[in-house]
Amino acid sequence: MIGLILLAAGNSERFIQSINEFINQKLINKDSESLKIDKTNQINEIIDLINRGAKINKAFLKIGNSMVWEYSINVFSKFNKHINNIVFVLNRSTFEIHREIISQKIQKYNFNNLEFIEGGNKRQDSVFNGIKLLENKYIDYIIIHDLARPLISENDIKKLIETIQDYDGLTLYSLPNDSVVANYDNKITYLPRNSIYLIKTPQIFKKNVILCCHQELRKENLQLEFTDDISLLEFYLFKTGFVPANPLNIKITTIHDYILLTQIINTNDFSFF
Image 1 (cartoon, helix red, strand yellow):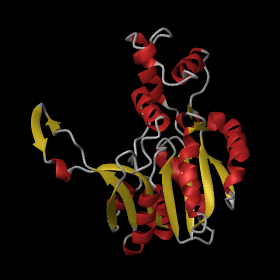
Image 2 (cartoon, helix red, strand yellow):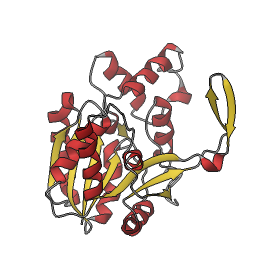
Image 3 (cartoon, helix red, strand yellow):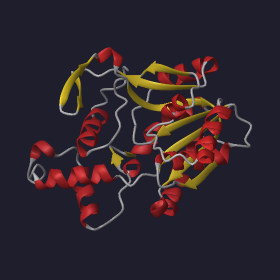
Image 4 (cartoon, helix red, strand yellow):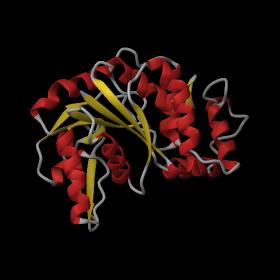
């Protein structure tokens, strides 16, 4: 059985910064037909929230008729027979509001054993908070997913579940299409694109391994920051694997990502992936 950790604990700082830059560049105004995303003009609604000083969490923005987090949960619902426990890790400042929203909307999916926990100061702290809730559950594997990635693929999740037996941890990835360079002390070095992996979630782990890694990190009190959990397993030399991802597995980091995903979802142009 599998435990599922769903992350929505960030402060969306880069997202808010990108909106402010967008506004400052005068790329958004209410009279611009080309920048209207749909009939509800959801970007202007986000701007209004920011102007009012409201807390923004990308996972709870709307795209079309659903919130961003709902797109992921709809796909995971196809794996009900494998998923025994679900933990939502939420932002501290909006914890009660978003827990209530999820509790109301998720009933139709018939998930068992749904729990909520506040996130930590860093992503790895938020993940560990979720893992601790699953430590004594009757599960063998843990899937970790960032809810800011709404267009996950049912086929990708199936591949992760079918392959994890041979690894300690597995991640989705894609290859870059652009040329890639590294700047070392103002010396530009071109890197081969087929050697550069762009890491995505969901990621899946053997429960005892991911728990061990997070516990060891805290035991050693290492002041290191890991932006995903495969890198943590790599650090402790566990066996990891990489599964090619659906190319539409885009993470909402900036307002441009939100616009792109909104256009894809509203035109229903992703069903063939």
